[in-house]
Image (cartoon, rainbow, N blue to C red):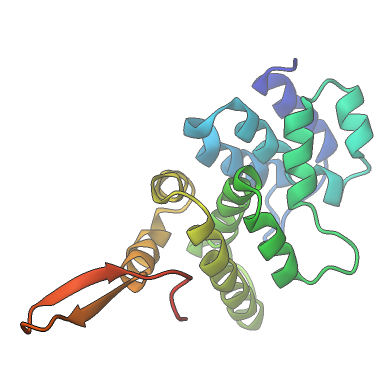
Amino acid sequence: MKSVREIELLAEQAHAGQVDKVGVPYIEHVRAVAAGLVPLGDALVMAGLLHDVLEDTDWTAEALLGAGVPAQVVAIVQAVTNQPGMAYEEKVRHIAADPQATLVKIADNAHNSRADRAAQLPPETRERLAAKYRAARAVLWPAAGRADVETIVRVVNPGLLPELDEHRAGSRVQTASAGGVTETTATSGPPAE
C-alpha cells in the first residue's frame, strides 16, 4: 500500500503546471483539503490529495489502482468526481449519501470558500460561487458528524465557524410547553438559507 507521502508525490506530478481559479499552483488546494482530513485518517488524507485527479488530469481510476492507490481511496475519489450530465446539486446529494466522500467534499468546499481566495475573484463570480458553496454546505454538513465537520472547518477554513454555529442553532427550534416554559428540540434537515 502506498504511503500518504507517495500519494502526495503522485498528486504533485498529476497536477504539475496547473493553477487554481486565483492563480495559485493547484497542488496547494489539494494539500489544504488533505490537511483538514489528517485527524480523520490516512485514507481520507489520500482521497483529499487525489480528489480532483480524475476530474482535472489524464489519470483514470484504473491507473490509480495500477499505481498502488488503495481501492478504498479510489472509490472515495470517484464518488467526489463530477459525472457528465449530473448537475452540481445532484452531485452534492449523491456525495452526501457516502460518509467518507462527504468528509472530503466538506474539506474541498471549506477551502474553496476561504474569504482570502474569494477576494481575488471578480465580484459576480465570488457571489455566484459563495451561494453555490453555501447551498452545498446545507446538504453536506447534516450528512456528517458535527465533530468531524468542526474538525475539518477549524483546519481548512476557520472563517466558516460562525456559519457552523448558525447551522447548529438552525437545526434546533424553540417550542413553548403547556406550562409556558420554553424548551429546545432537535429538528431534521438543513437550516433555511
